[in-house]
Image 1 (cartoon, helix red, strand yellow):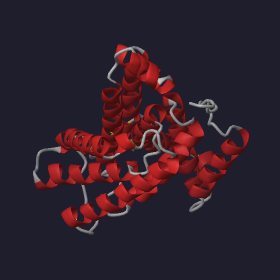
Image 2 (tube, one colour):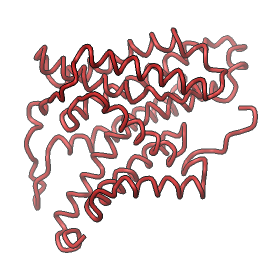
Image 3 (cartoon, rainbow, N blue to C red):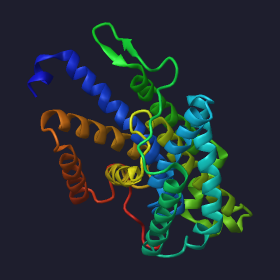
Amino acid sequence: MDMLLSSPSFAFIQVLNSISLGMNLFIIAAGLSLIFGVLRVINFAHGVFYMFGAYIMYTVSKDLQLGFFTGVIAAALGLAIIAIIVERGLFQWLYDKEHLLQLLLTFAIVLIMGDMAKIIWGTDQLSVSYPEGFGGASNLGFTFYPTYRLMLCVVGPLIFLGLWFLIERTRWGRLTRAATQDMEMLSALGINVPVIYVTIFVIGSALAGVGGSLAAPINSPTPGMDATIIVECFVIVIIGGLGSLWGTFVGALIYGFVFNFGSVIVPNWQDVFAFLLLMAVLLIRPWGLFGKPEQEGH
């Protein structure tokens, strides 16, 4: 705490750390929120999609030596393929079922894909190098800051703007919003609703893969990394409001600041602060900061 008050440069670094953490989490949580907002599916397997993204990044960038950014693209494409298989093979049968069945199915997917990851990549902790040109620190004039984390501070808002434009300013986005309100009416008008559903699931899962690939240099790919991230993502989307893109963005920033400054002020208590914030939001506004109360019969 004394360092924050006595050193402006240290405090500024912590602000950037909070933003970079929040933006990386936003990329992952945005996919979870998007899937729930349209499909009304609580995808507990989203964390294992993130883990597969990190492992694909390792395979492409380290084993195949094809470069970091090729690994990001490969992670997005790989998770898109997995998403099509999962959505068409399993999820399409559960859209009208209760959330408990959805949770049981997605938990089964977590167990299966978790064991698959151990078979393919083993149980050792793997390492992914920073992309070329992003491994050092950038001179900000009054302090130095890791270039890669600075890149995350920029990539997160760019992805947010891209998603916002897609959802709010395109015909496909209007159809997607309509599907969340009245799927039957949209289908009666001749719109292929299953195509909208699978597209949303692919985009959301690809975001998890991209988030995992971008996190790989910071959080080394290892079995079980999905368990931590899915909890963090649920905290973010519940704080912001399930299904709200703005809520997910703001929730990720709030979580990043609470977690990072909590670790500085009271080390090892950062998770407690995040969950206290979650409890406060649930007590005061159960549908989240930017969410809306669930309508009867929705």
